Amino acid sequence: MPRYRITVAYDGTNFAGFQVQKNQRTVQGTLEQALIKMTKGEQIRVHGSGRTDAGVHAYGQVIHFDYPKKIPARNMLMALNSLLPLDMEVTDSQIADPEFHAQFDTLGKCYQYRVSQGRFTDPFKRLYTGHYPYPVDVERIETALQDLLGEHDFTSFAASGGVIKNKVRTIYRAKVSADPGQHELIFTFIGNGFLYNMVRILVATLLEIGNGRRDEHDLLRLFTVKDRQQARGTAPASGLYLQKVYYPGDEAELAALSQIPLTKPLQPKHPHGLRRQS
Image (cartoon, rainbow, N blue to C red):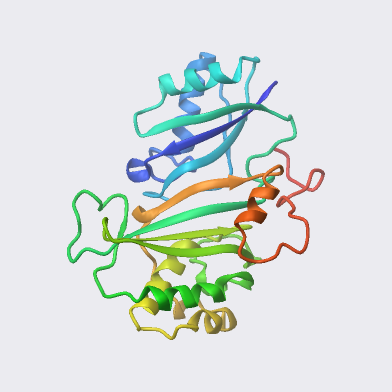
């Protein structure tokens, strides 16, 4: 059966996350229901690049699935979009290599987090930003972000409930920019992988640094102590966006975006032959 690689965007507000859950509306479940309609009852399993939590949005979530017959990639895009709800859209469709795996072939991911800095919660932003009404020194955050670059143990920034034991990750890019017109701060993180709630915990910690509640270099201490209780804040899911997933073929783009030298070749999470069966 041909394997399709699909990029999907969604507003996460009314989804209980990506992964299928009983009696819950999820991204994976919604996609699989659309495919059941296309195949007139045949169950098609969708595999995602990773899970997003309830309320988290995506511009560039990547999935793959095997379909019982070969149809042109554009026809697959059109068919899915005709069946999906208005808070989801397929933005790209390709017929992939039979060995392609949306999760195990990833080289890295880019997340963005938007923070509204208005005094009160903006009713038109409340579902699409986090809210932090306190003074923030952006220069303090920029200093802290330099400590984030490179390889670190992120145990202090991993929420309970995660099943991954290895907490070491590499951050290639960590930036913050201010949008005075929108009264927002926009954080961008690119790394080889992210733990459960890692970006949201990092943002909460960085905002405390910007507000003067923490030392500018407190990230270095938190890497060392490996204690989630010392980085207890978690920014709301509403401000988080999965922007892009990087795969083999995207090495040059990742290298151009990286703020650190890439001294060794980028490798997928699970090279062919070492991955679990898809």
